[in-house]
Image (cartoon, rainbow, N blue to C red):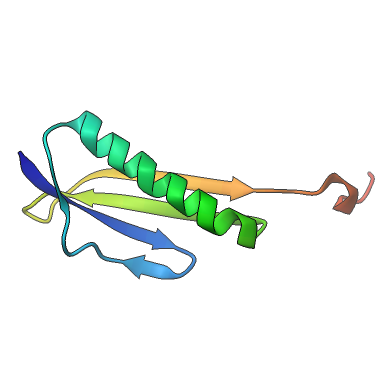
Length: 83
């Protein structure tokens, strides 16, 4: 088991994870990244029409081992000028 840290970069700027989680596998890391990004989507998407969030996963040596991105964009079709 190793400790992994999940640093967030979104519209609010970078947030460094200083506590991390003890995880056993890439599958567990992927599930945690998915959970974090789903929380961000639920909390932030209703507040803005578009945005991005990234999670950089670091191992216990501080080395980045994974990056995940979430991009959201909502365009109202009646706001688009006809061509």
